Image (tube, helix red, strand yellow):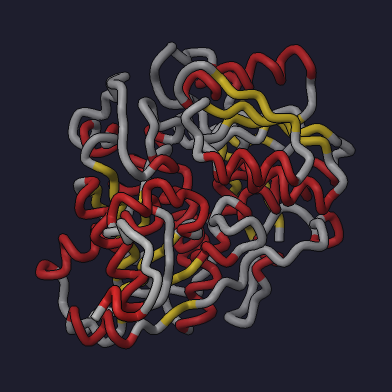
Length: 391
């Protein structure tokens, strides 16, 4: 298999090197307060059969990956939810069981291997929490130095994770978007490799592995995939994986992918028709998808439009209700951002054929943000001394 970069805006092709992160020409037109210009996508050329290994479709040899079990996450068949919804072929891809309990391990795994292949030992990034703790954990397994910029509102559990893994953590007085800009400035001054979502092509490429696994587990592409969306990097990775399988002749169509956003953090939804991304302050109970400017906005929008994808919004109340329903009906405790995908399915289910194969991707474990989870349940307000207190 041969690999190269192709610019998603102008179509220029480039060799893959550690120095090149975005298209030089398109990125020169980058403006403040807009998504990243000149996103580079990995283009592959060659042949694999249906028994391919995921590593066959990645631009880094297997020998460079750290010894940590990323991926191969379970595809749940939730009987109670199937009965409740009438969708007998509904599945949940549970990426909360990755090593750091987050989907983001897929990107960190490939970034780590790419850095090792090119002799780079420091990796820098901004994060709302999950990407940072993920890169810290994967970097620890690889013996790499990880520096993270987090907004000071990041959930405590995610900060503790990153610290336990030994990362250098800086809390930023401001939003994720400000942390993103500071991390790029740090990389320009100090060097190393920047892992920022979308900016580093390996982040999208690593995330495509979830689609390759879904195909292998179902032995086909599903009809619909629901995924929560903030920066637009995960949804782009999901489509990219199926796009690669289509181009290799392994599947004959890309599933309809639903990008599900929170109503109060919905930049991609608002830009769907116009293509203009406004910098509007956001807030949502689903912190992992809370971004003012989706850094992969242009690229995600293009992929969704090219492959018949859709963008929908759900309320915070619907997200918390979906989180509780996943836990109480399926036994799967997802953080709010992961449950957002299920909330999107609940909202759209009447528009879908109930004979369809539907995959819902849950992207993080619920214990990463207990404070938000408590908003969706009623906690005991008093302690008991004996059984008589409840009879």
